[in-house]
Image (cartoon, rainbow, N blue to C red):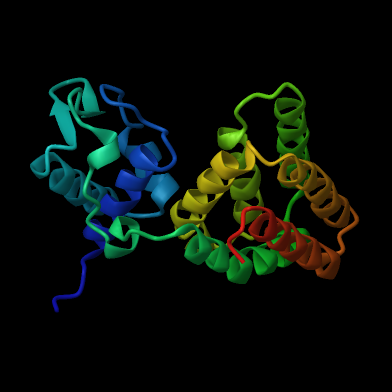
Length: 224
């Protein structure tokens, strides 16, 4: 098997931004080359190669003098990922097992490494999630941002690259939990526990709280 090039991996990341993170909808413009290459921590040459791959696969289009856009007619629910990981039919139990392995350690490192501004961002997202739950509103986007802000606070670029997979599990969990009152209550109390340990710079506590949070979700959603 021929090893995947970096540009192929970056193409996967851009697909994840479109299909999983929902950052860019059909017809919307991507950030400019400088911004996107900095965010992905790659050269502009590699980014151009990745974009060329996605143009060839009819996912993106380059509008001369305007920039790069997601194609108007692309069906984001049926984009075939270039990555076997993203493209796999991963079931909820498998996704949550990945969270159980990954996120407690993320919480541990983030508690140690987060700046004051990053810690405030995490707390703010947690508060906004509570408001959404109380108002019976969709919290999927905020859940993504809450967990992603914790990952970013680790200052580990490779951990950030795993977020699209984690976000699949979060999205599935939100959908399944809407009919389970206990799962929603656990989400609020668990988030508060995670945030309290992080604010107090207690990494062991944050690790345990995150593990408890995911185990609660697995139990309530029947994916133990």
